[in-house]
Image 1: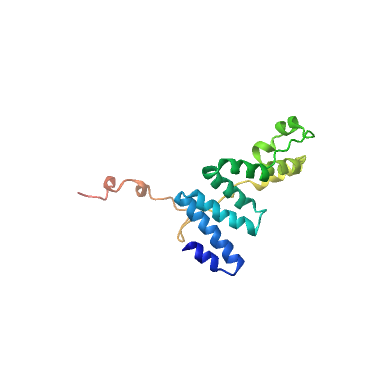
Image 2: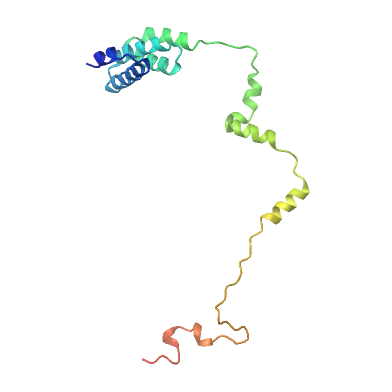
Length: 158
């Protein structure tokens, strides 16, 4: 039934999407042979699509391992370049931390003393303004019994 629906589609974009979904459905069911058949039809639309070719190789590993090896050798040829300096690549830190680390390291420059001083001034904490009540009188001393516990007050009677 799914094959009939795919066969009746005239629009190539819709047909490609249906083949993709059918292959996904069959691979999730565990039917690698049917998924490989759908993916083969899908590669006819775009034979250079790496994503589809990788899925096809994965489907072939269960069904036909020999064909999977041939296709993987065709898609990912093993090339050895002798002009690569392996030691310099292994010693560089950007491999461990990523490309952003490499860019930041190149962008850093000598920091002048004036920048350090201004940065310290900029990082100071702001002192908050003391908020007092509206009727506050700084000349009148506070009531000493105000801070005594309620039950310890002289005015409190049991």
